[in-house]
Image 1 (cartoon, helix red, strand yellow):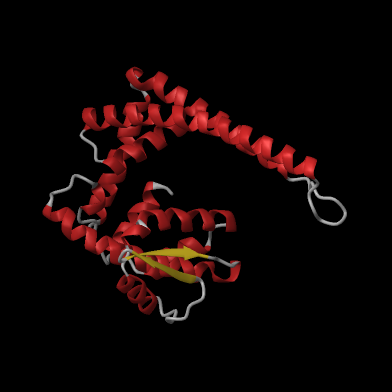
Image 2 (cartoon, helix red, strand yellow; image 1 turned 180 degrees about the horizontal axis):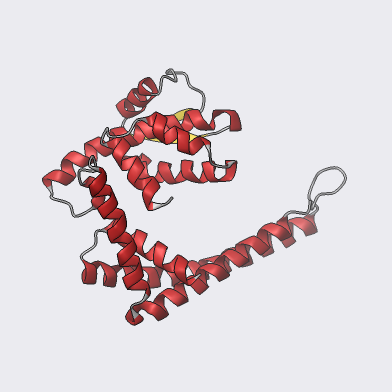
Length: 248
């Protein structure tokens, strides 16, 4: 998601925006982007840190009812995890549910972060529009500065190329898998099973190769940028993402 979208989420978490305002924007997205936003929001929540009361409170706040079928709570070791099974007709309801879960978790995290005097922008008071504009302006200037900084140019160019190659391999795999490889009875033959297994192993090995290299390069960039510009973890991640897009 964009920085503007994430700021809107944080402002919702702080009680500045209503869920209706976020839902209005979400409703305008095409289906693929809606699903992407759902999973991005899901990961911002960090489901492993949810407790049962969070789920119940979010269901009440969302006015969905305790028996809402799209939310399944998996309990273990005093933790809960939400698994979402989202039919197209329910995606906006699930978005509202996740918004309320995010707000609950964010409010709890906000207290601890304030006590620890976190540098992360997510825990600053964003009720003032001028503060938001300054945050966006500062980020854009930093993206420009890092993009034009020759000290980081080769690393970002390499990372962008790796992502492009990674995505090309993934896309090619999807295209190869598209044709049905089934017999008239709908079963795979032994030869087809073996071929598919071998191809899957090769695909995973190639993807893992790219992933390992990208992880190493990303970690080095994140560490360097965090030290040089005094950034928090999420700020560094956002900066790397936005600068890398300039190199794509």
